[in-house]
Image 1: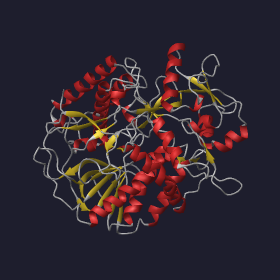
Image 2 (image 1 turned 45 degrees about the vertical axis):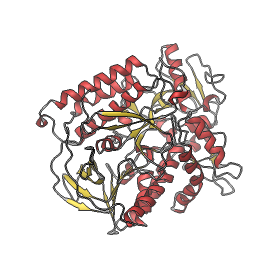
Image 3 (image 1 turned 135 degrees about the vertical axis):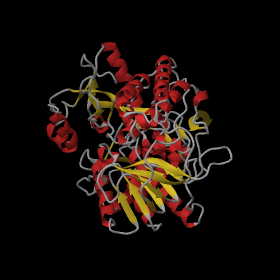
Image 4 (image 1 turned 30 degrees about the horizontal axis):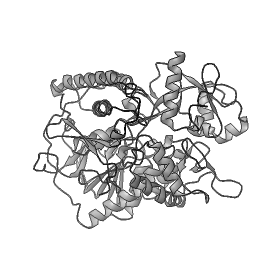
Length: 564
């Protein structure tokens, strides 16, 4: 096996700044963390690849799940989450999520988020797959993420002129800065980050931001795959950057494929339009080529079964029929209701020549959410001192083998607040102080951006919705050959720039994903092995990985609850 790179080749920093805490990412997790941190520390730096409004949260359609109905309880929410997670959730983490969730949503309301309400002024609650109660709050029908981002960004805009907060937009974190290695040769505590300014701004090129703590809220790994519902910025940066800095990652093999993504042909690439699960929650059916509802009789909840069940069943239907898609049928629902409840989806489908109330909608599974990420405890702390991770970039254990619908935005809220409190306390108490960064030893070669389509095809073919040992073994070998090829090339052959850094991160994330999926010889949630179709109780453990001092990936079985 070829060693992983320990840092990315980049020009030396041309400028340096200092802050207390760096927050990387501008989705719900990153923005909530920044706002809460600002209440407790003097200096916060927010770094985002695009504009503040470009985080993954803006694309969320469904809503936020929380036990807000008087007849609902956190215990019922916990039970639904544990069932969806197929025995791999951290029950401690889920309990934190469901008990602190309602308060976190109410705080979001106080910060200005405007959710849909009924005639009596109360919040309108709906249901999605895997939930046995109506507990999903939403905004603008199907534009919940956009409304949350608007509310949080409005708060950030209010303090943009505050000298205690700096926002750097159009910037990518290339690597984390780490202090002197430990006695075993592993990187020392995280003490900042190298940042590349992509667009125009007050600074140019690569610089160094020194900090007492760094919070990774970079979103998921969508662009590792050939097609995804994720924005173009989701290139697995958090996972790859954390891995290079010495942090453990976990549950990387668990990828949720959304069952109902608009099918646009075999050559469709990049971010594809998602048809929210809430559409099925309001009564839409899934039909095969013969016009039959194939989910009835497959699962007691039919179209509202957990996403892994629906995705797997759709794949089976497509294989049986030798087709590229199945169909979502909303024709029995009222036209005015569909336009009012799902305005964004209605408009998106109209752009593609489809009338939601009249036409069958061709859909197929596509990569949607990553349950794995940087391994953290209940306070967002990673295994590497000074590094926190929240949101989709983290593995809190909340989702286990399969995320329950609309739990992701809630996770971002709850654990962002916890991470902000903990990091601020650690800084105030002097536990986390500014350390001197040192250069990390090891490989720093880059993979050229021209290789990205090939890498995405390998990940899609080897680690798609249904996998097998032969396909995964082939994917691991092919990805290893790509890394080996460019490790031996002179550094000057690949110019250090954004597309190359992103592609190198994609290769790292795909490699760890395929190796973990090959090791886990069972089917569970978002990890489905055709050659090991049953769930094995022996595998009710978390599969974690980290790089050894030589850059080799080292897998280990970890307990489900990491609470320290």
